[in-house]
Length: 115
Length: 117
Image (cartoon, rainbow over all chains, first blue to last red):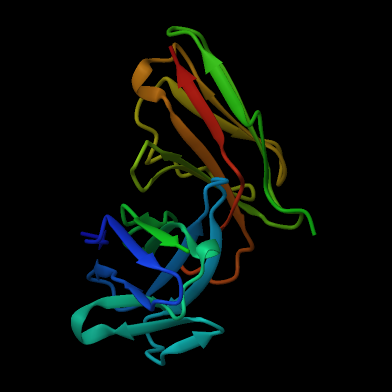
């Protein structure tokens, strides 16, 4: 079965704090892809990152970083020095051959950053 | 360039009426997807189109739901005899076909918020 679990429903932080959003996935495929999307209050999903199962290198993009660990089936997302504009719902998603063409989404984590 | 566009942005309808939702994918993207997002939930896959291949309808929740796509452009999602449980945001996404399905990055439109009274 394909499944994505985002155990944190809501997180509240104060500006400049670091915050990590957890994502745990399940799949029996050896080739799969993991994604993070941001959904700000406007509603449109914004693509953040795509990672394939053969690339376990961590990635950093500005204040964003991602930690992919196959041993724990996790693909966690860290925002460093959070800002109010980071307030949004963040979704982790999985795609693989078994899932067909669909992205399998977690239920999302709502991040609120206050000033 | 222009992203995925959807219309209308909001639709309020009465139970039992039919509705049509429209999606314009990114130019050049041959793959198109429809998802449904219920309040406070993640996205549920509905249907996928890729070129002239038969669409993947495995996510459609009932036969009241159908979708069409004209060539590699516009798609319409139709919900017949709407029910209150159909209230949700309907999101469209498109992608280039690079990896052949799994792995292709999907880019989403702003969605249509459907409210069934």
